[in-house]
Structure formats: C-alpha cells, structure tokens
Amino acid sequence: MKKMEARRRQIVPSRPKNTPLHRLINDYDRPIEISPVHVLIISLLFIANVFLLHLYARFGSGSSLYQVIFAAMAKWYPEMLFNFTGPPEAANAENKRPAGSHRFPEEKKHRNVKLGIEVDRLNNITGFCNISLPRLFAKNRSIEIKYSANQDSRLLFRTHHGNSTAELSLFRSFFRTPGKRFEAVGFSSRFERLSSAVELRADLRELGVLRLNLERRVGRAAIRCQAGLNTAKGTLFSKLELSGATTASLHRNIYNKIDWGIGVIKGDVHVADRFFLGSNVWGYKPQSVYPSVGDLDGGVSFLEVTDSLGVRSSGFDFFVFSSMGFCSQQSNIAETITSCFLSLFCDTKPKCLGLSVGAGVSSPIVLKGFEERRIQARFSIPLTSNPDTEVFKLSVVADL
Image 1 (cartoon, rainbow, N blue to C red):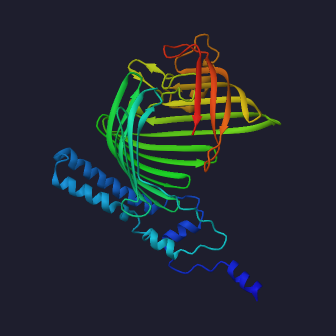
Image 2 (cartoon, rainbow, N blue to C red; image 1 turned 90 degrees about the horizontal axis):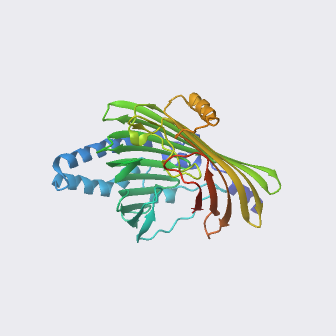
C-alpha cells in the first residue's frame, strides 16, 4: 500500500485546460525565453516614457501634471507588469510544482545606503552614493537610486518574478571618446529572463539615439545585437558584437585559453557608438586603439584575440600571453580580418592595431555563498607605439 502511494506521488498530474501563462513559462524550458507579451508591455511603457519626457521638456519638473504622472508611474508600474500573470503572491500559493522540481531560495534583501569612491575604466576617481529600497511597494519590487559626481546617475524601478526581472530607469550618463564627452539624459525599459535580455533605450540631449538591444548568453559566449535610430541625422543603424572564451587542457596541469571578440556596425552612427579598443587588449589604455581619418575617429568593425598558455601549481596559475586588437573603418568584417593580418607584417604598425606580449599569475578567491573568483597580476609589453601607449604596463585585475 505504501509503495502504491509513493508511486502516485511521483506521477506528474496532467495539465488542465486554460493553464495560466506564468505556469507555462515556469514549467517549460522554451528555446526563446522572451515572451511576446513582455515585448508588447515594454513597448507600451517605452511610448509612455516618451510622452513623460516630452512633458518634462515642455513644462519642466514643476508641472503638477508631470508630478502626478510620475507619482502614478512609480506606484502602479510594478502592478502593470504582472496584470497578465496575476500577483506573485497568488502565483506562489497556487503553483504546486511537480515532484523533483527545484525552487530557488528566496533572497533576503535589506534597505541600505552606500557612500564611497570608485575608479572607472578611464582611471578617474569619483564619489558615489547608492540607495537601495527593496520591497518598497510590495514583495519582489524595489527601487534603487545611484548618484555619481562625474559618471552615470539613475533612478531604477525593479521587479522580480521567478527567473524574470523587469526594470524601468531614468538616467543621466556620459559617453566618452578620446578628447570628447557627450551627455545623455533618457530612460530605458529592460526585461531579463535566464540568459536573455531585451531593452528599449532612449539616449537624448547630446546623443539623440533611440535603440533596441537584444542580449543572449550561451555558455561562455555572448551575443549582443542592437538596432537604433540616429535622430540627429535621421538614419538607421545596426550593431552586432560576439564574444567568448575557450579553454583546452593540453597535458595534466598545462592549459591553453583563448578570449576573443568581434563586432561590426552597419549604417551611420554617432561617434560615441563607434568602436574604441584597449580595455581587452592587455597592456593598452582604454580607448587607445582606434582608426582616425580626418575628424572622424573610431571604427565600425573590430577583432580582438588574447591567447594564454599557462600551468596550474599549488592553486596558482602561471601563464604567458599574447594579445591583439584591430579596429577598422571598414564595415566588411572579412576585409577587416584580412587587413588585420596584413598589418602584422608592416614595419610601421598603424594606430588602429594593438599588439602585446607578457606574463602573469592568478589566484582564486573563495567567498562564502559565491562562485569562485580570481585575482590576476600581469606584466605587459606593447609592441606598437602611439601617444597613448606605455613602454610596459603592470596590471592587477580582480574578478569579483
């Protein structure tokens, strides 16, 4: 009798008709995790944000109508996202998962205020203030406020439901290129589920760019697609970036790791959206590897490859490496790859080529409750010369 009862518990009940959408999403691993309903809702929010920013530009923040709409958006925005799935509390109470299914433990969040200093990728030191207010309106819904003296500032509304996260943010950000800085004030609506994300974003003021971003991560590879409108010139553009890493074990503790990245832009884009390399080319400053023709800086295609050969011993990794990055104003990626290899054999290396060799050591950092991270120190020798290149560079990088 007990065996029969145990078997009955293991049998997954048949799915009834008119199953709610949130149960279909949670119970099945779909090849495309972004639901069309989510895209429709984010599109409607995007249109509402345009109207809200139009009111702000015309009447100012002192307008009573602007304040009423903003207050209503702050209160009812989390409810709008779950009208099609029902409230999260009811879903958690009604959704009885089959035997053997896994439920992630609930993350405990506390309200906090953080003050401090930070260093950006251009080695600028600025002060910041971060305020986090989780569960301000209801469970799994939070507000985050970030202010930085010279960097991005934003007001973020975030809500969680299972493996899905939806965000609405108002921000001020700065896009920097060599010798120039562009300020953008705008808004974005973002939806994430598992390894996929979709975002509608408007960078106004000095940029004037409307864009749709799609991101997808598969293992250690990442795909980023972008389609946008340059309102200043009235032109459309698209942007595609691929990146990844592969590691092969050669013999016992000897390994070979290759980090790579490739990207291309089609259409007329703002200079702030062009490619400027250096961050992933070891031994070079950020945004120091790029083509320059007349007054036009930056590239529309690039190729980056870093090859490391290392040995593991006593928990440490000792390795030697070679790193290369090439940025071009050609939109044909095949021609960019050809030009990259031809430039390696030139006596005078162009400024759009970054090439370095060096050695380094890395050690793991074990933090309770987190995946293993590593801290890395490397000594790089750039093999090309331009005004932004040092003779050698010593770097310490912590992946936290």
